[in-house]
Length: 408
Image: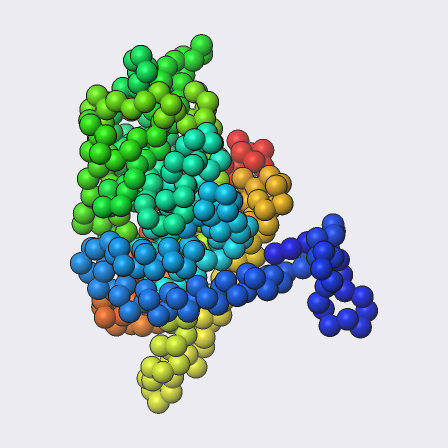
């Protein structure tokens, strides 16, 4: 989505180079590069991910093969400068790519989105030059993954009450505590995790929170895979434990005491990722429902021709289009260096709940077959639920929005 000048009367609607950024006029066209990106990622997802997604979900297996294929396509470090091995695209392009992967499978979209926004993001935006040079090239090439250590067993929505703590001891930080539900932290190629810790107490009695980089294999640090998930079964979800884990003092990310701010700023961008997953998943549900309802016949005609079903499809199409406009506007604000926190919360909330309604309609249109693993819509129905919980629950998003509009 770009802001640009109106075409002159009689023009075909295309705009001269540079004109599309003039203030005050809206242009809803994507750039040629973004359209090419969408087509290439969609083709990749259909050919490489769709054929294996159901089996990987059944086996609860993280696929290193498709991970490498996504890396070869350039789906990691999408918005990172070429200086650190990234693709140097805008955030809108990253969101479009995430949307297209999610249109086919939530697990692969989770791996990609978490790695870009939550894994790479904090290192790119808050890391020192040494930290960037050390970690980002490997992460952008897809040779390694990085975790985002925020959630704890007793600190989910109330992230500021985290109990994991780090004590400064000479030239090291000594970390004790645990984290849970951390994506990409315990694969064979996981390089480390950004861990938010208590590092002191502020004058007003609140905990001082800082982020510290902890590499896998560090003594005192264990990362274990969490099994038996309802959703995203082919993505890696981890539980982290720190027992007198010692890391160098230079592993502090950015400024001491800024950890909570770093995490919340990261989540603003991450909410756009979840929005893209909701939007892509909703589109996937719609595509499957429309195709099935056109070929499934009852009472002598396709079920799509019954008004009750046609209206379900119409509602899905309406909500998807509205969600896409809101999400793309939020991305445009971010790419324009304008405030986008409110819009990110709105987009995340709306897209996740739109996918819920679309998945529900899609299963209903499939009837009994929608309950069978033979049909992908069953997986989409399960995968949707985390979108209303991860990176800020729907309830938290409503709180964020209420604060922005002055209601709280």
